[in-house]
Amino acid sequence: MEAARNKLNFIYILKFFSSIIIAIFLHWNDHFIKNLGYENLFNFKPLRFLTIRTYILVELFFVIAGLLFYIMSYNKIRNSELNFKDFIIKKISRLFPIIILSTIFMFIGNLILYFFDKPLWSCGTTSLFELFLGILGGRTALTNSTLLNGPIWYISVYLLCIIIAYYLSKKSKKYGDKVYLIPILISVVLYYNSNITTLINYSDIRGLFSFFIGIYIGKFLILYENFNIKQRILTKLISSIFLLLYFTSLYFGRVDAFYTPETFTYSLFVFTPLILFLYGFKHLNKICSLKIFKFLGNISYGIYIWNFPILLALHLLYVFDLFKYDVYNYKLFIMLFVIHINVGILSYIFIEERFKKIKFRHIDKLIDSEV
Image 1 (cartoon, helix red, strand yellow):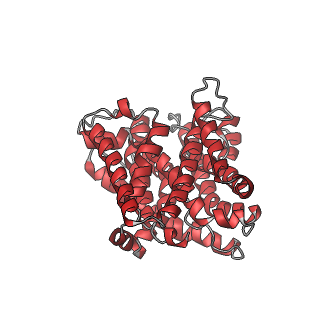
Image 2 (spheres, one colour; image 1 turned 60 degrees about the horizontal axis):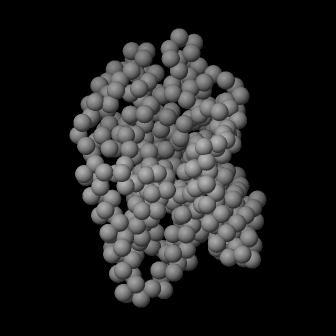
Image 3 (cartoon, one colour; image 1 turned 30 degrees about the horizontal axis):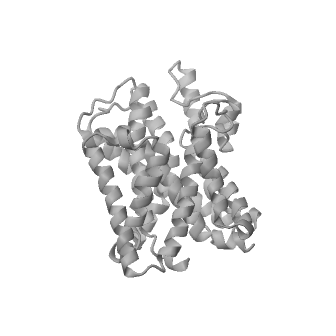
């Protein structure tokens, strides 16, 4: 698995650009301008796609997370070298400091809007119970509503995925890797069952399916290391064909016709061939191994989680006439990019890394890059 792990540096770039696109373009459309009373007026196809359709990149997050789980943790869990307590504490130490801080920020921001009789931010609430749920990365099922800091839903589902994956990895020693098919099949059944409860919702289905597809991608990459040259070329060729079909359908506006339902088709027919295509390119991997690209990948989590607080802060400045801006001007997008990069850097250095070093020095660095 070490050979496969050393060829995954391109994932740092995938994570960074996915988080930036979601934060700056998608949430600009879905939350930022709508809270200010504007509509998306962009007709330029690439820009309209970035602002409307890129929610599917969250599936890519889950696919990558599943892939890295298999590459980095599977053997350790299966061979009882990594117990559940250390496994989950390592995750919590990385995930929850900025979840707590960002959720509190969102709550305070919404209280300010409430006290001045302004409409609350999307996902906004003044409920202390929902604040408590948000701090815990709480399940939306308990209130049948979204979380204060909307992007945290990913963490909620991600934790569910890794807990299930840990248990199944222990069982795989007896039953083999086919156990990972269970959550994939369950997610498909639930998707086509109209009686889905709030305890297992659409967000769970998105995460479960894509995460465990990612696990099988990880397994395939281990096998790929033993492929001969013809098998490797065939893998690249098939991946290229799938990617070409996708971009062709995108260009001719036929994505909805061929890639439905998106939760399943993108994970299988777009993100899987994308990863298989990029894997093993020596020069690409070497470039992406540079410290700058690894650092950009590491700050992607902070960019994603601090996105709503950043947008809410700009929203507050606008509605209280402290800073007016044109929501369609390219300068706003540049400003958003710079702010997100800087906040991501500060979050990673002064919160995520510092908290982890202070509190959990005794836990080996087993799964640093899985989120």
